[in-house]
Length: 222
Length: 355
Image 1 (cartoon, rainbow over the protein chains, first blue to last red):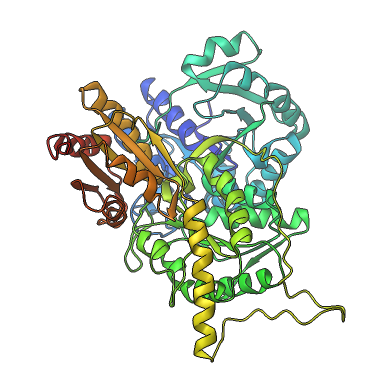
Image 2: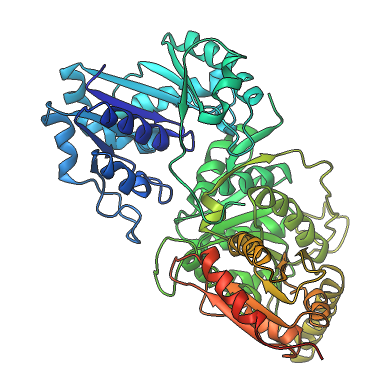
């Protein structure tokens, strides 16, 4: 288990939810873990929305003091450096979407690479219009790697259609996810699905399936 | 794979504009609409279109005037303070009778305000988009699918009536993700014999202009333009009616607040209160016929808004103040909760009475 685990990818792919979910998972196992929100791009649907849940579970949460406020300032707190310097704790990093979001990771990249104990997951939703194919995802991968100076170590297939997601819609993306993994020369680590769809999906595809809970609820949902 | 994709409202709107034949997007970044520009920047170069980040919102709307004068489908988008900057251009577009699609993904104001969702540009969109006598057609989407569909519809209405169509969305609709179908069927295109595209020596010059120093002529232009507006008012009023048939209390809400209100109506019905929703889809023309007809049966109305109370005036005008109209509102980037709307529905249910 890598000490530093980074979630990156095209924006709107589900990185923030997966990062929160993974940090909660580590905390439940008794691991000392920090979750760093490095998203300086997205103004809405930030990790901070799940802050209460995370902190109750014992996750140390690091975020811009301006996140979710009305100050549209792309700033990161000095505390972010603790993900590198404090090696007694595990660190989960929610990287902002696309190359623009990943740029902020660049300042920590050399230290993360030198320590050499990290995993960086390319979170993919093949129902997002700009990552519909393996080739399109590969384009996003190259842009992010150039921006942050770190290489992805595996793909997580988080393909979903929001509330309309079915086991069939998930399994239909399995072939593309494997194709992408082959194209990039990195493994497909897992397919992540809403917990109630897990059994349905496991009947349709092989490989590791991880059930997840959605941590971002909206009052305007209908 | 399924024919649907998962998109943010801002992206769906941009993709639909491209499907509508828009190849000229002129913009300037501002939260929470920046994804429209970002998406266009990715897509336009791949399809031979033009994405241009202007030096300001004002420059962008003036470029829209140029593109539209040449008969092409032109689009710009911004968020509240940026739309205010465009108001001179909106007035010039109206004065030149030029079609265009202008998108406002509203945020809290006034002034620089905030970046969270708001509906406080209702007056700006429906009353005072700029100086002079003019209107814009104003469409209010409430789902990501409608963000896409109304981009198509918006271009069609703009070309049909030679008017600006404004899509009045908000930060929720711009940022939220929902599955969306991008199959729009046949896209209507319109002849533009007025476009300034060169005469090839074969006809008189077309001149696109809003300047008229002869007052009798300028008055006539205004009268002719308002005859067109009357057609729009007669033909284009649209609203969704939700559980209104037996409703004692009618909520009126558009966009994101309509979504919250539907949840509140379910809660009210569970308590035995007959509540319904009229969701205006066109804010100009306001669906006066539908709202007015509802006053014949309903006892009271609730206007649900993310503003200090703007649309409520159109509700009162539509029913000629014949029923009480309560305001349920939040502002500054706050969204009303279903519980807050329910409380107003309960209050309204104890008011008024049939004739």
